[in-house]
Image 1 (cartoon, one colour):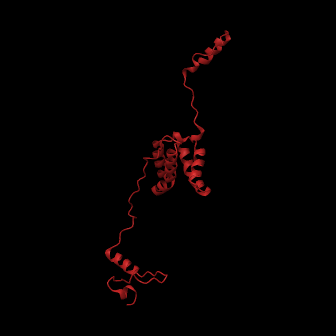
Image 2 (spheres, rainbow, N blue to C red; image 1 turned 180 degrees about the horizontal axis):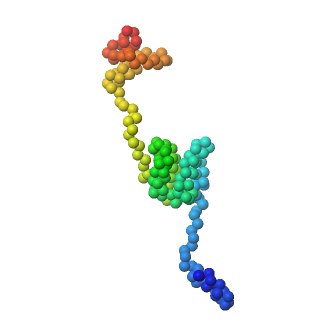
Length: 181
């Protein structure tokens, strides 16, 4: 509508600037230094990342950029990261892969960008990936096992280590400890 009014005014000889042209704020174009690629190059250079390691991590960021829909790193929010995490886990990736692969790289990058004042906030700061206790944690040693290990460590060292789970050493008998029984 505004354009047609301007054309009509100009047709009647009124070439004055359009008084309604300034009713919208100026469009702020994204600062190119906040785009992923320049930030990534600077990050890799500052961290002395080898080309191979940088290439492996780049895959994680390509996935994030696709999920967010923009390579402007200022646009990434905590909500984006949470939904991306859920999407990665739903795709069949293990929690460990998501945590120690994808999010380790992303958290390192955003933490660096925030510290270097490249970005105003670190959207990954409070994103946590809980690791379920799946029973794979190593159990502690029994007293008997600990005694056997410590007693064996007091024996002579000949450069080879031979494990024999049937032989028990007694810390109180030096002859057994040294294998002279």
